[in-house]
Image (cartoon, rainbow over all chains, first blue to last red; front, side, top):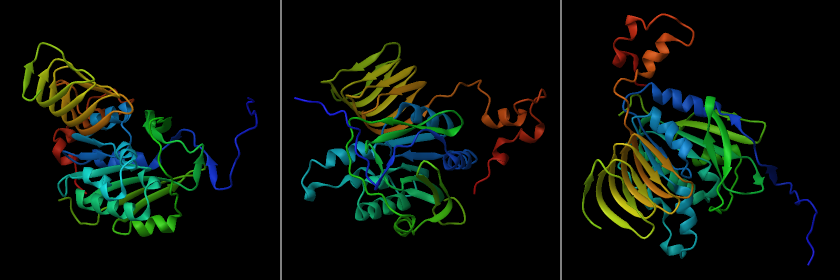
Length: 206
Length: 113
């Protein structure tokens, strides 16, 4: 038996996995929410100790619902039994902010629509939604968690227990799926990542 | 086990095969099995990657391993003497003077959008 020493093939539809970077949108997301009182936020990313401490230390109450792991567990079920969004059963207008991370990159369009509807219902008026999206499927296409460090530095940590499909989208497709929200700011980094901050329409926080 | 646990001066552990449904009040809490309910810990809550947790946690600190099946809320108990972020911000990083009176009413500083 021989072992290949050839490098991994590189495909044109992939990008090298990004290294850590200072997140402009995370800073805006957090600093805006910190100005409000009794803030409740929801983090649907992979469970991450650093992120829990970061948000729980800054917000009144921090909710975590790891949709990545739930999505992975759903993949083993029959299509008719799959309904990952039943886990987002929070009452309407529960949160001031929702951190999606790169969840939409692992959902089909129909699932993204369901997710957006859930987020719209769960957010209070003027509530914020943060999203990260890859322009192209990274290589290797491992699932990572974005780990928050000092000065809003986002680093990535591989989640070996997660294996999910990738559905990277162009800006126009993403904006179309999130059309119910107002875009506050977006940012594209040289490492191929895009960040978006959306706001639920409304004049005052309800 | 179904029911409430009250052992404020002791630690409480749910092993990998353990299943608890109820409210837990303890000094430190460690979960490696299933726990559905609320945890009120005077000290630390530890959730391992084998845990399946659903509920609310109030503790002084928390550690959660990657891979834990987790759905819940976390509220960290603040030190009563800890100064607010606004008071700290008012001082500024290099200002030797204490916070000005303009920040004596923190509610006024917290504007809603």
